[in-house]
Length: 309
Image (tube, rainbow, N blue to C red; front, side):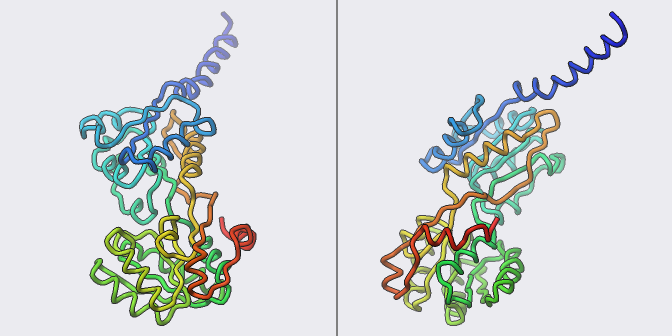
């Protein structure tokens, strides 16, 4: 065999290696629990419009810590779905497998400590929450006369304040920020913030928005006659007038898009990002009781348009 042919053969083998790695490297979903929300994300991730390759699906409660260490100590992609699965994986990660977290708030994800030996380029995420520009675009589209934006945050979301102030200033809005270091401080933070607010913006925050506090938050805002813009359908059902959120199916499919860009040969995964797709929910009954003339969903979406990423 001539030297030229041998060289071509070597180049062909080298060219095929990334594709062989892609075919052999495993993809494993780890769901925080077996609830329907996590199942919907998993179905969208691996379904007809999803990754379209073999995916192993596990439920966190069925995976011993030793198995997490074993899985994360081998080349592959692990996709934890939900904050609990992501935090547990980080605590047990052996430093090799790439990670793509789904259904996680940005603040909580940013606080996770990954192993020192795991390169940042091997850890990605699709955030549960929305970018600041989209949040305030929604406020402006739904409530154009609301120029004073109120928000109550715990220390986990301190990073968000500067972004909110910058975006509010760009839109000629003002921002009133209430701080709550614990659930017990949420009520007083609301009482200080609501008199200075035309609308209260809720973002994912484990202290302010949780099962034990959310009803009191919504009742207090209603007594002050201040509408709430939230981040989930559940908040709209509970009393927010409007919410901007990304559906579970869209989150799963976006995760699949990023997984297709994962490079098994290097372990690199696209950087964490906000979802591009979004949905809207409206509570017409609460809007009417607050004497608000909200546009319908189609008009809201038209007004928001491409004003947000």
